[in-house]
Image (cartoon, rainbow, N blue to C red; front, side, top):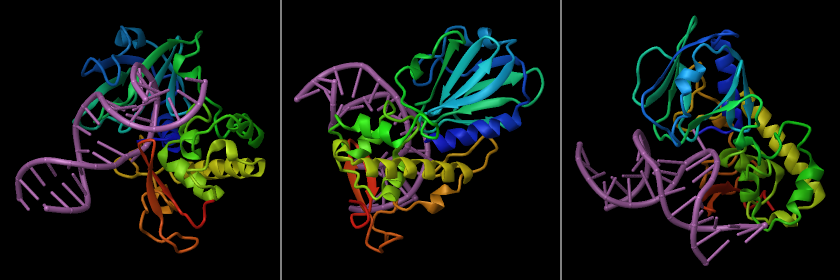
Amino acid sequence: MPELPEVENVRLTLKNILPTGSRFKRITLNRPDLRFPFPEQLAEKLKGQRLLNIDRRAKYLVFETEKYLLLSHLGMTGSWRELVADEVHDHVVWEFESGPTLVFNDPRRFGFISLHLKSETPSHFVDLGPEPLSSEFYAEYLFAISRKKNTPLKSFLLDQKIVAGLGNIYVCEALFLAGLKPARRAQTLKLVESERLVKAIQNILKQAIRAGGSTIRDYKNADGKSGEFQERFRVYGRDGEKCRTCRKPIKLVRQAGRSTYWCPQCQK
DNA sequence: CTCCTATCCTGCGAGC
DNA sequence: TGCTCGCAGGATAGGA
């Protein structure tokens, strides 16, 4: 479900809901696992810990307590919300000594939770590429790393080791904005195109964050609100419809098992 | 190495 | 209407 802009909105809304310093009182796990088994003794370890901050790296939410970093990946359909009433697929419930109760709901269970001591780098972060909105992500970096990659630009940008946080929607949208064909081999990228691509990625992500993310079907942030960026899609989900720039039809192709939407007229 | 395919799981819309 | 099929915002282990 969620790519960087959606996870960022979940983070921001969770921070609004939960007072800083909230202390975990009771952790309830309604099944033994999600994508992976829950960490050993998760409930016992979290109990009594203060929640100091909620951060984000790539598509991971990072809950920082006094002792731990708890990573929450939302997979395709994971969501956090304030508990009002029980719902199907509520798998994790967090009660605090004061304040609201949080619930993690995930129908497909592709999401997961992992727990790490703060002194250690979470294994999930070791191979991640730079944050696309940071100073670590720039044209020369992308250009250099693309030199030996024969893979299509679409797969190249979906690879979290290249740049972290992009998913199917924002890769399609960024390639359109950059005027680059998704099937182009990464190693054919020119430096000026790499510059355009970096700017397009950053532009799209910033716009999407500001719009509250994109809701295709069921994404909601922790306030229960849907995103609005889907109304501004140029290509994603628009196959057969007219390109908003050139009026020619948007095409749908399948690349590495994923749908790619693009405009053959505008993207070269 | 490098790249692609299949797989995990549930829900929903298209098409018959 | 009801059924089956294919596909969905992700990540990754395996195979070619």
